[in-house]
Image 1 (cartoon, rainbow, N blue to C red):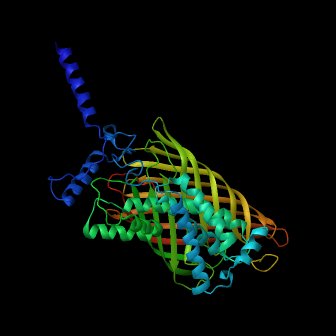
Image 2: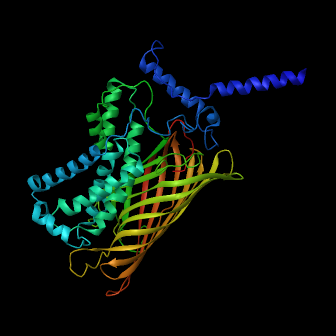
Image 3: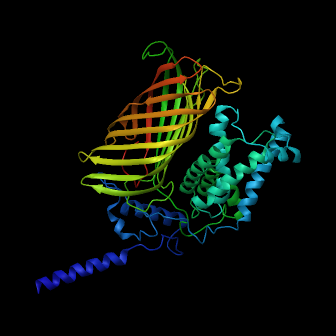
Length: 519
Protein backbone atom coordinates (compact mmCIF):
# COMPACT_ATOMS: atom_id res chain seq x y z
CA UNK A 1 0.00 0.00 0.00
CA UNK A 2 2.79 2.38 0.97
CA UNK A 3 4.55 1.80 -2.36
CA UNK A 4 1.33 2.45 -4.29
CA UNK A 5 0.83 5.76 -2.45
CA UNK A 6 4.41 6.74 -3.18
CA UNK A 7 3.94 5.89 -6.85
CA UNK A 8 0.68 7.86 -7.03
CA UNK A 9 2.31 10.84 -5.38
CA UNK A 10 5.27 10.70 -7.77
CA UNK A 11 2.95 10.28 -10.78
CA UNK A 12 0.82 13.23 -9.68
CA UNK A 13 3.92 15.35 -9.20
CA UNK A 14 5.17 14.58 -12.70
CA UNK A 15 1.77 15.29 -14.22
CA UNK A 16 1.62 18.55 -12.27
CA UNK A 17 4.95 19.60 -13.67
CA UNK A 18 3.80 18.77 -17.19
CA UNK A 19 0.68 20.84 -16.66
CA UNK A 20 2.94 23.77 -15.75
CA UNK A 21 4.97 23.59 -18.95
CA UNK A 22 4.76 27.00 -20.57
CA UNK A 23 3.79 26.69 -24.23
CA UNK A 24 2.57 30.27 -24.82
CA UNK A 25 4.18 33.56 -23.84
CA UNK A 26 2.85 35.50 -20.88
CA UNK A 27 0.30 37.96 -22.15
CA UNK A 28 -1.72 40.90 -20.92
CA UNK A 29 -5.23 39.76 -20.00
CA UNK A 30 -8.28 42.03 -19.52
CA UNK A 31 -9.60 42.35 -15.98
CA UNK A 32 -6.34 41.35 -14.25
CA UNK A 33 -5.07 44.80 -13.37
CA UNK A 34 -3.47 47.60 -15.34
CA UNK A 35 -1.10 46.81 -18.20
CA UNK A 36 1.85 48.17 -16.23
CA UNK A 37 1.00 46.04 -13.17
CA UNK A 38 0.66 42.89 -15.26
CA UNK A 39 3.95 43.54 -17.04
CA UNK A 40 5.69 43.94 -13.70
CA UNK A 41 4.21 40.64 -12.47
CA UNK A 42 5.34 38.91 -15.68
CA UNK A 43 8.91 40.19 -15.26
CA UNK A 44 9.03 39.20 -11.59
CA UNK A 45 7.74 35.70 -12.41
CA UNK A 46 10.37 35.21 -15.11
CA UNK A 47 13.09 36.38 -12.77
CA UNK A 48 11.86 34.08 -10.00
CA UNK A 49 11.56 30.98 -12.18
CA UNK A 50 14.22 31.40 -14.86
CA UNK A 51 17.34 32.90 -13.29
CA UNK A 52 20.80 31.31 -13.24
CA UNK A 53 21.81 29.97 -9.83
CA UNK A 54 24.92 31.60 -8.35
CA UNK A 55 27.25 28.80 -9.43
CA UNK A 56 25.20 27.45 -12.36
CA UNK A 57 25.11 28.07 -16.08
CA UNK A 58 21.38 28.19 -16.82
CA UNK A 59 18.07 28.30 -14.89
CA UNK A 60 17.13 25.16 -12.97
CA UNK A 61 13.45 25.49 -13.86
CA UNK A 62 14.02 25.52 -17.62
CA UNK A 63 12.17 22.16 -17.82
CA UNK A 64 8.96 24.14 -17.32
CA UNK A 65 9.41 25.73 -20.73
CA UNK A 66 8.63 24.48 -24.20
CA UNK A 67 12.21 24.84 -25.45
CA UNK A 68 11.10 24.68 -29.08
CA UNK A 69 9.56 28.12 -28.52
CA UNK A 70 11.59 29.67 -25.68
CA UNK A 71 15.15 29.88 -24.50
CA UNK A 72 15.98 28.85 -20.93
CA UNK A 73 15.15 32.36 -19.69
CA UNK A 74 11.56 32.34 -20.94
CA UNK A 75 12.17 34.58 -23.96
CA UNK A 76 11.17 33.77 -27.54
CA UNK A 77 13.70 31.83 -29.61
CA UNK A 78 12.39 33.48 -32.79
CA UNK A 79 10.48 36.63 -33.65
CA UNK A 80 6.72 36.02 -33.64
CA UNK A 81 6.04 34.99 -37.29
CA UNK A 82 2.53 36.48 -37.33
CA UNK A 83 3.57 39.87 -36.02
CA UNK A 84 6.82 39.98 -38.01
CA UNK A 85 5.68 38.64 -41.36
CA UNK A 86 8.21 38.53 -44.17
CA UNK A 87 7.42 41.34 -46.56
CA UNK A 88 7.44 40.91 -50.37
CA UNK A 89 10.97 40.97 -51.77
CA UNK A 90 10.36 44.21 -53.64
CA UNK A 91 10.05 46.15 -50.37
CA UNK A 92 13.58 45.58 -48.99
CA UNK A 93 14.92 45.82 -52.56
CA UNK A 94 13.29 49.22 -52.99
CA UNK A 95 14.65 50.34 -49.64
CA UNK A 96 18.20 49.34 -50.55
CA UNK A 97 17.85 51.31 -53.80
CA UNK A 98 16.41 54.22 -51.82
CA UNK A 99 19.32 54.17 -49.38
CA UNK A 100 21.81 54.34 -52.23
CA UNK A 101 19.82 57.10 -53.92
CA UNK A 102 19.86 59.05 -50.66
CA UNK A 103 23.64 58.67 -50.29
CA UNK A 104 24.13 59.72 -53.92
CA UNK A 105 21.97 62.83 -53.47
CA UNK A 106 23.84 63.80 -50.31
CA UNK A 107 27.26 63.39 -51.91
CA UNK A 108 26.31 65.44 -54.96
CA UNK A 109 24.02 68.19 -53.67
CA UNK A 110 25.03 68.61 -50.01
CA UNK A 111 28.64 67.49 -49.67
CA UNK A 112 29.37 68.37 -53.33
CA UNK A 113 32.03 65.67 -53.31
CA UNK A 114 33.97 65.13 -56.53
CA UNK A 115 33.18 61.41 -56.52
CA UNK A 116 29.45 62.13 -56.17
CA UNK A 117 28.93 63.44 -59.72
CA UNK A 118 27.68 60.31 -61.41
CA UNK A 119 25.98 59.87 -64.78
CA UNK A 120 25.17 57.14 -67.30
CA UNK A 121 28.69 57.64 -68.67
CA UNK A 122 30.36 56.92 -65.32
CA UNK A 123 28.08 53.89 -64.88
CA UNK A 124 29.11 52.59 -68.30
CA UNK A 125 32.79 53.09 -67.46
CA UNK A 126 32.50 51.29 -64.12
CA UNK A 127 30.57 48.36 -65.59
CA UNK A 128 33.24 47.90 -68.26
CA UNK A 129 36.25 48.37 -65.97
CA UNK A 130 38.12 46.01 -63.71
CA UNK A 131 37.70 46.81 -59.97
CA UNK A 132 40.61 48.22 -57.98
CA UNK A 133 41.87 48.27 -54.39
CA UNK A 134 40.88 51.76 -53.34
CA UNK A 135 42.78 54.49 -51.49
CA UNK A 136 40.05 55.70 -49.11
CA UNK A 137 41.00 56.76 -45.61
CA UNK A 138 41.51 53.87 -43.21
CA UNK A 139 38.54 54.73 -40.96
CA UNK A 140 36.19 55.08 -43.93
CA UNK A 141 37.07 51.64 -45.26
CA UNK A 142 37.06 49.74 -41.98
CA UNK A 143 34.38 51.55 -39.94
CA UNK A 144 32.28 53.63 -42.34
CA UNK A 145 31.69 51.01 -45.00
CA UNK A 146 30.71 48.20 -42.58
CA UNK A 147 28.17 50.57 -41.03
CA UNK A 148 26.79 51.30 -44.50
CA UNK A 149 26.43 47.54 -44.91
CA UNK A 150 24.32 47.36 -41.73
CA UNK A 151 21.75 49.64 -43.39
CA UNK A 152 21.36 47.36 -46.42
CA UNK A 153 21.21 44.30 -44.18
CA UNK A 154 18.52 45.74 -41.90
CA UNK A 155 16.39 46.81 -44.84
CA UNK A 156 15.57 43.09 -45.06
CA UNK A 157 16.15 41.97 -41.47
CA UNK A 158 13.60 44.46 -40.12
CA UNK A 159 11.04 43.30 -42.67
CA UNK A 160 10.78 39.68 -41.57
CA UNK A 161 13.89 38.13 -43.19
CA UNK A 162 16.32 36.06 -41.11
CA UNK A 163 20.11 36.48 -41.01
CA UNK A 164 20.93 34.34 -44.05
CA UNK A 165 18.05 35.77 -46.08
CA UNK A 166 19.17 39.34 -45.29
CA UNK A 167 22.82 38.81 -46.25
CA UNK A 168 22.16 38.96 -50.05
CA UNK A 169 20.64 42.43 -49.65
CA UNK A 170 23.88 43.64 -48.04
CA UNK A 171 25.80 42.14 -50.97
CA UNK A 172 23.44 43.66 -53.54
CA UNK A 173 23.49 47.08 -51.89
CA UNK A 174 27.27 47.12 -51.84
CA UNK A 175 27.61 45.99 -55.48
CA UNK A 176 25.15 48.56 -56.81
CA UNK A 177 26.85 51.31 -54.82
CA UNK A 178 30.30 50.39 -56.10
CA UNK A 179 29.24 50.40 -59.75
CA UNK A 180 26.61 53.15 -59.74
CA UNK A 181 26.99 55.26 -56.59
CA UNK A 182 30.32 56.97 -57.30
CA UNK A 183 32.31 58.01 -60.35
CA UNK A 184 35.42 56.23 -59.05
CA UNK A 185 36.15 52.67 -60.09
CA UNK A 186 34.48 49.91 -58.03
CA UNK A 187 36.75 48.53 -55.32
CA UNK A 188 37.34 44.92 -54.37
CA UNK A 189 37.78 45.70 -50.68
CA UNK A 190 34.39 47.42 -50.37
CA UNK A 191 32.59 44.60 -52.16
CA UNK A 192 33.98 42.17 -49.56
CA UNK A 193 34.18 44.16 -46.35
CA UNK A 194 30.95 46.16 -46.62
CA UNK A 195 28.48 43.25 -46.91
CA UNK A 196 30.22 40.66 -44.70
CA UNK A 197 31.08 42.83 -41.72
CA UNK A 198 27.97 44.89 -42.45
CA UNK A 199 25.82 41.78 -41.96
CA UNK A 200 27.62 40.93 -38.70
CA UNK A 201 27.26 44.41 -37.24
CA UNK A 202 23.75 44.64 -38.68
CA UNK A 203 22.62 41.50 -36.87
CA UNK A 204 24.16 42.81 -33.65
CA UNK A 205 22.25 46.08 -34.01
CA UNK A 206 19.04 44.21 -34.82
CA UNK A 207 19.31 42.05 -31.72
CA UNK A 208 20.21 45.00 -29.49
CA UNK A 209 17.17 46.90 -30.73
CA UNK A 210 14.99 43.82 -30.07
CA UNK A 211 16.18 43.77 -26.47
CA UNK A 212 15.21 47.44 -26.15
CA UNK A 213 11.78 47.15 -27.74
CA UNK A 214 8.69 45.90 -25.90
CA UNK A 215 5.50 46.37 -27.89
CA UNK A 216 3.40 45.58 -24.81
CA UNK A 217 4.34 48.94 -23.24
CA UNK A 218 2.69 52.33 -23.63
CA UNK A 219 3.22 55.98 -22.70
CA UNK A 220 6.59 57.40 -21.69
CA UNK A 221 8.26 54.00 -21.42
CA UNK A 222 7.18 53.12 -24.95
CA UNK A 223 8.45 56.46 -26.31
CA UNK A 224 11.86 55.99 -24.68
CA UNK A 225 12.14 52.45 -26.02
CA UNK A 226 11.18 53.46 -29.57
CA UNK A 227 13.64 56.37 -29.65
CA UNK A 228 16.48 54.29 -28.21
CA UNK A 229 15.86 51.40 -30.63
CA UNK A 230 15.68 53.83 -33.55
CA UNK A 231 19.04 55.35 -32.61
CA UNK A 232 20.62 51.90 -32.38
CA UNK A 233 19.03 50.68 -35.63
CA UNK A 234 17.78 53.60 -37.78
CA UNK A 235 16.49 51.46 -40.66
CA UNK A 236 14.43 49.36 -38.27
CA UNK A 237 13.08 52.53 -36.67
CA UNK A 238 12.01 53.80 -40.09
CA UNK A 239 10.37 50.51 -41.01
CA UNK A 240 8.49 50.40 -37.72
CA UNK A 241 6.99 53.77 -38.61
CA UNK A 242 6.08 52.59 -42.11
CA UNK A 243 4.58 49.34 -40.79
CA UNK A 244 2.63 51.07 -38.00
CA UNK A 245 4.47 49.16 -35.26
CA UNK A 246 5.80 52.29 -33.55
CA UNK A 247 2.40 52.91 -31.96
CA UNK A 248 0.90 49.41 -32.12
CA UNK A 249 0.37 47.76 -28.73
CA UNK A 250 0.46 43.97 -28.33
CA UNK A 251 -0.60 41.78 -25.42
CA UNK A 252 2.37 39.42 -25.70
CA UNK A 253 6.10 39.56 -26.38
CA UNK A 254 6.86 39.37 -30.10
CA UNK A 255 10.68 39.56 -30.42
CA UNK A 256 13.49 37.09 -29.97
CA UNK A 257 15.71 38.05 -27.05
CA UNK A 258 18.70 36.82 -25.08
CA UNK A 259 20.08 38.13 -21.76
CA UNK A 260 22.63 40.90 -22.14
CA UNK A 261 25.27 42.13 -19.70
CA UNK A 262 26.75 45.61 -20.10
CA UNK A 263 30.15 46.65 -18.73
CA UNK A 264 31.13 50.32 -18.64
CA UNK A 265 34.68 51.52 -17.95
CA UNK A 266 35.61 55.17 -17.45
CA UNK A 267 38.94 56.53 -16.34
CA UNK A 268 42.40 57.61 -17.40
CA UNK A 269 44.30 56.34 -20.44
CA UNK A 270 48.06 56.83 -20.11
CA UNK A 271 50.10 56.48 -23.33
CA UNK A 272 53.85 56.08 -22.90
CA UNK A 273 55.80 58.33 -25.21
CA UNK A 274 58.87 56.13 -25.73
CA UNK A 275 59.11 52.63 -27.10
CA UNK A 276 59.82 49.81 -24.63
CA UNK A 277 58.94 52.18 -21.78
CA UNK A 278 56.34 51.37 -19.13
CA UNK A 279 56.10 54.20 -16.61
CA UNK A 280 58.18 56.90 -18.23
CA UNK A 281 56.97 60.20 -19.74
CA UNK A 282 53.43 59.80 -21.02
CA UNK A 283 50.46 61.52 -22.60
CA UNK A 284 47.23 61.19 -20.58
CA UNK A 285 43.69 61.10 -21.92
CA UNK A 286 40.20 60.48 -20.61
CA UNK A 287 38.92 57.02 -21.52
CA UNK A 288 35.50 55.39 -21.97
CA UNK A 289 34.91 51.74 -22.77
CA UNK A 290 31.63 49.94 -23.49
CA UNK A 291 31.35 46.16 -23.63
CA UNK A 292 28.21 44.19 -24.52
CA UNK A 293 27.92 40.46 -23.81
CA UNK A 294 24.81 39.02 -25.44
CA UNK A 295 23.60 35.51 -24.76
CA UNK A 296 24.94 32.83 -22.45
CA UNK A 297 27.69 30.68 -24.00
CA UNK A 298 26.85 27.82 -21.65
CA UNK A 299 23.09 27.74 -22.20
CA UNK A 300 22.23 24.52 -23.99
CA UNK A 301 20.29 25.38 -27.10
CA UNK A 302 20.38 25.00 -30.86
CA UNK A 303 22.67 27.82 -31.98
CA UNK A 304 21.76 30.40 -34.62
CA UNK A 305 23.91 33.22 -36.03
CA UNK A 306 24.69 35.81 -33.36
CA UNK A 307 22.57 34.44 -30.52
CA UNK A 308 25.90 34.84 -28.75
CA UNK A 309 28.17 37.83 -29.35
CA UNK A 310 30.54 40.26 -27.68
CA UNK A 311 31.13 43.82 -28.85
CA UNK A 312 33.67 46.08 -27.19
CA UNK A 313 34.44 49.70 -28.14
CA UNK A 314 36.94 52.03 -26.52
CA UNK A 315 37.31 55.79 -26.92
CA UNK A 316 39.79 58.31 -25.52
CA UNK A 317 40.11 62.07 -25.82
CA UNK A 318 42.47 64.76 -24.60
CA UNK A 319 46.21 65.04 -24.19
CA UNK A 320 48.68 66.04 -26.89
CA UNK A 321 48.97 62.81 -28.87
CA UNK A 322 47.84 63.31 -32.48
CA UNK A 323 48.73 59.88 -33.91
CA UNK A 324 46.06 57.71 -32.30
CA UNK A 325 42.46 58.77 -32.87
CA UNK A 326 39.42 59.08 -30.62
CA UNK A 327 38.33 55.51 -31.45
CA UNK A 328 41.03 53.31 -29.90
CA UNK A 329 39.51 49.98 -30.85
CA UNK A 330 36.31 48.17 -31.76
CA UNK A 331 36.44 44.40 -31.46
CA UNK A 332 33.84 41.71 -31.46
CA UNK A 333 32.79 38.21 -32.36
CA UNK A 334 29.52 36.44 -33.02
CA UNK A 335 28.71 32.76 -33.25
CA UNK A 336 27.53 31.41 -36.61
CA UNK A 337 26.91 27.85 -35.46
CA UNK A 338 27.91 25.85 -32.42
CA UNK A 339 27.20 23.13 -29.90
CA UNK A 340 27.16 22.96 -26.11
CA UNK A 341 28.43 20.03 -24.06
CA UNK A 342 29.74 19.12 -20.62
CA UNK A 343 32.91 17.27 -19.63
CA UNK A 344 32.79 16.50 -15.92
CA UNK A 345 32.59 19.89 -14.19
CA UNK A 346 33.71 21.68 -17.34
CA UNK A 347 31.01 23.44 -19.39
CA UNK A 348 31.90 23.84 -23.07
CA UNK A 349 30.74 25.59 -26.21
CA UNK A 350 32.47 24.87 -29.51
CA UNK A 351 31.55 26.73 -32.66
CA UNK A 352 32.34 28.69 -35.78
CA UNK A 353 32.59 32.44 -35.30
CA UNK A 354 32.89 35.64 -37.27
CA UNK A 355 35.28 38.32 -35.99
CA UNK A 356 35.53 42.07 -36.41
CA UNK A 357 38.69 43.95 -35.41
CA UNK A 358 39.51 47.64 -35.62
CA UNK A 359 42.59 48.97 -33.83
CA UNK A 360 43.91 52.52 -33.97
CA UNK A 361 47.09 52.80 -31.92
CA UNK A 362 50.30 54.81 -32.07
CA UNK A 363 52.02 51.62 -33.19
CA UNK A 364 49.69 50.45 -35.96
CA UNK A 365 46.25 50.61 -37.55
CA UNK A 366 44.47 47.33 -38.17
CA UNK A 367 41.06 46.53 -39.60
CA UNK A 368 40.28 42.85 -40.11
CA UNK A 369 37.49 40.50 -41.15
CA UNK A 370 37.91 37.01 -39.72
CA UNK A 371 36.29 33.57 -39.55
CA UNK A 372 37.34 30.63 -37.44
CA UNK A 373 36.75 28.11 -34.69
CA UNK A 374 36.35 28.93 -31.02
CA UNK A 375 36.01 27.10 -27.71
CA UNK A 376 34.40 28.56 -24.56
CA UNK A 377 34.87 26.87 -21.18
CA UNK A 378 33.74 27.42 -17.62
CA UNK A 379 35.47 25.60 -14.77
CA UNK A 380 33.92 26.06 -11.30
CA UNK A 381 36.70 25.97 -8.69
CA UNK A 382 34.50 26.83 -5.69
CA UNK A 383 30.95 28.12 -5.21
CA UNK A 384 32.20 31.66 -5.91
CA UNK A 385 35.41 31.14 -7.90
CA UNK A 386 35.10 30.37 -11.61
CA UNK A 387 37.62 30.24 -14.43
CA UNK A 388 36.20 31.36 -17.80
CA UNK A 389 38.29 30.89 -20.95
CA UNK A 390 37.69 31.26 -24.65
CA UNK A 391 40.24 30.50 -27.36
CA UNK A 392 40.01 31.15 -31.10
CA UNK A 393 41.99 30.35 -34.23
CA UNK A 394 40.85 31.76 -37.54
CA UNK A 395 41.63 32.94 -41.03
CA UNK A 396 41.63 36.57 -42.11
CA UNK A 397 40.51 36.78 -45.74
CA UNK A 398 40.87 40.57 -45.80
CA UNK A 399 42.56 43.12 -43.55
CA UNK A 400 44.05 46.57 -43.79
CA UNK A 401 47.26 47.27 -41.90
CA UNK A 402 49.17 50.54 -41.67
CA UNK A 403 52.76 50.72 -42.76
CA UNK A 404 52.95 53.79 -40.50
CA UNK A 405 56.35 54.94 -41.76
CA UNK A 406 56.09 54.19 -45.47
CA UNK A 407 53.36 55.11 -48.00
CA UNK A 408 52.54 52.86 -50.92
CA UNK A 409 54.28 53.11 -54.27
CA UNK A 410 51.82 55.77 -55.43
CA UNK A 411 52.17 57.83 -52.26
CA UNK A 412 48.39 57.67 -51.74
CA UNK A 413 47.80 55.06 -49.07
CA UNK A 414 49.62 54.57 -45.76
CA UNK A 415 48.25 51.06 -45.32
CA UNK A 416 48.33 47.80 -47.24
CA UNK A 417 45.76 45.11 -47.92
CA UNK A 418 46.66 41.80 -46.33
CA UNK A 419 45.44 38.30 -45.59
CA UNK A 420 46.51 35.93 -42.85
CA UNK A 421 45.64 34.23 -39.57
CA UNK A 422 44.71 35.23 -36.04
CA UNK A 423 44.88 33.53 -32.65
CA UNK A 424 43.06 34.85 -29.57
CA UNK A 425 42.71 33.82 -25.96
CA UNK A 426 40.67 35.50 -23.22
CA UNK A 427 40.70 34.10 -19.68
CA UNK A 428 39.04 35.49 -16.55
CA UNK A 429 39.35 34.24 -12.99
CA UNK A 430 36.20 35.58 -11.34
CA UNK A 431 35.59 35.74 -7.58
CA UNK A 432 31.90 36.59 -7.92
CA UNK A 433 31.34 40.31 -7.77
CA UNK A 434 34.29 40.86 -5.43
CA UNK A 435 37.30 40.69 -7.74
CA UNK A 436 38.54 39.43 -11.10
CA UNK A 437 41.83 38.86 -12.86
CA UNK A 438 41.82 38.64 -16.66
CA UNK A 439 44.43 37.85 -19.28
CA UNK A 440 43.83 38.60 -22.96
CA UNK A 441 46.22 37.98 -25.83
CA UNK A 442 45.61 38.48 -29.57
CA UNK A 443 48.06 37.74 -32.34
CA UNK A 444 47.75 38.47 -36.06
CA UNK A 445 49.99 37.08 -38.81
CA UNK A 446 49.51 39.17 -41.96
CA UNK A 447 50.88 38.90 -45.49
CA UNK A 448 50.53 41.78 -47.96
CA UNK A 449 48.89 41.07 -51.30
CA UNK A 450 48.25 44.68 -52.37
CA UNK A 451 50.67 47.50 -51.57
CA UNK A 452 54.19 47.42 -50.20
CA UNK A 453 55.35 43.82 -50.29
CA UNK A 454 56.05 42.23 -46.95
CA UNK A 455 54.50 40.80 -43.80
CA UNK A 456 53.63 41.89 -40.30
CA UNK A 457 53.32 40.07 -37.01
CA UNK A 458 51.18 41.92 -34.45
CA UNK A 459 50.72 41.02 -30.80
CA UNK A 460 48.34 42.62 -28.30
CA UNK A 461 48.50 41.69 -24.62
CA UNK A 462 45.97 42.97 -22.08
CA UNK A 463 46.09 41.84 -18.44
CA UNK A 464 43.46 43.40 -16.15
CA UNK A 465 42.47 43.29 -12.48
CA UNK A 466 39.34 44.65 -10.80
CA UNK A 467 38.37 44.94 -7.13
CA UNK A 468 34.87 45.68 -5.89
CA UNK A 469 34.25 49.07 -4.32
CA UNK A 470 30.48 48.95 -3.87
CA UNK A 471 27.95 46.46 -5.26
CA UNK A 472 28.55 46.41 -9.06
CA UNK A 473 31.09 49.24 -9.01
CA UNK A 474 34.76 48.21 -9.13
CA UNK A 475 38.16 49.81 -9.42
CA UNK A 476 40.27 48.42 -12.24
CA UNK A 477 43.72 48.53 -13.80
CA UNK A 478 44.51 47.40 -17.34
CA UNK A 479 47.86 47.24 -19.08
CA UNK A 480 48.10 47.19 -22.87
CA UNK A 481 51.18 46.06 -24.78
CA UNK A 482 51.32 46.46 -28.58
CA UNK A 483 54.08 44.81 -30.60
CA UNK A 484 54.70 44.90 -34.33
CA UNK A 485 57.34 43.26 -36.47
CA UNK A 486 57.02 44.63 -40.02
CA UNK A 487 59.18 43.03 -42.66
CA UNK A 488 58.91 45.18 -45.79
CA UNK A 489 60.92 44.09 -48.82
CA UNK A 490 61.89 47.63 -49.83
CA UNK A 491 62.40 49.06 -46.33
CA UNK A 492 64.30 48.08 -43.18
CA UNK A 493 62.52 45.78 -40.75
CA UNK A 494 60.43 47.79 -38.30
CA UNK A 495 60.07 46.47 -34.76
CA UNK A 496 58.18 48.39 -32.14
CA UNK A 497 56.80 47.82 -28.64
CA UNK A 498 54.50 50.42 -27.11
CA UNK A 499 52.56 50.16 -23.86
CA UNK A 500 49.54 51.92 -22.35
CA UNK A 501 48.08 51.87 -18.87
CA UNK A 502 44.48 52.42 -17.87
CA UNK A 503 42.99 53.07 -14.44
CA UNK A 504 39.22 53.10 -14.39
CA UNK A 505 35.96 52.67 -12.57
CA UNK A 506 33.99 49.70 -13.85
CA UNK A 507 30.20 49.52 -13.69
CA UNK A 508 28.84 46.04 -14.37
CA UNK A 509 25.16 46.02 -15.36
CA UNK A 510 24.06 42.42 -15.13
CA UNK A 511 20.86 41.10 -16.62
CA UNK A 512 18.66 40.21 -13.62
CA UNK A 513 18.27 36.64 -14.90
CA UNK A 514 21.79 35.90 -16.07
CA UNK A 515 24.71 35.23 -13.74
CA UNK A 516 28.34 34.69 -14.64
CA UNK A 517 30.88 37.52 -14.61
CA UNK A 518 33.08 36.45 -17.51
CA UNK A 519 33.53 40.00 -18.78
